[in-house]
Length: 258
Ligand code: MG
Image (cartoon, rainbow, N blue to C red; front, top):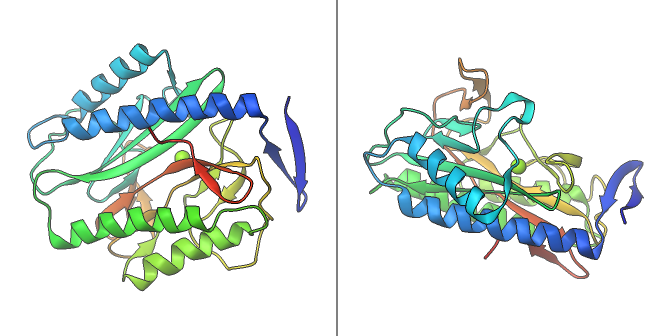
């Protein structure tokens, strides 16, 4: 049964126990695929290889990709390298020592989506790249900590923004986290910038994908010629971490975890 909760005039879907169970299962699959992909990252591999591994793992788990065909997206996996923020398309690009690679995987199990992303270095990366990765990862953790019943959506956004900017980096503003469930993107949007105490009140049973996208330069982005891949406008490095979470009784539970 799907319960609809009216939260500040926004229709946020409150998930039932069986729906959460399906999302937890989808989340485990997504997490396991990301673990597998992480092991494959090394200098000299093509990003198309990562797509192949993803397709194989999805088939093995009986999970459908959330991304393939979504608004026409051509792959099962997003691979975004260096100045690519999100929505990179796997292909002939060869990973080089020092690159940073964002891997974004979405899976559907029993009709429910889970969505997660990580950024990893290829071989040895620069100290700046290493810092960018660790700050983005920590920003996601901070955002998850701010997500609990009674908190405002803006608390998540502001927590992520304040943390990232205190480290000298920027949050991308043109793309956001989102509600997730039967649809890959549901209400509400979860921007990575905002104000404490503003926005919708979070209610138990709400499922969200939090996903700080962080750049080493400015926050503006541009679209690549393929009309999909989002690039930093100033060609600075970008990192991306994402978890699907549920607002549980007292705190958030991460669903995209093994
Ligand atoms: Mg997402």
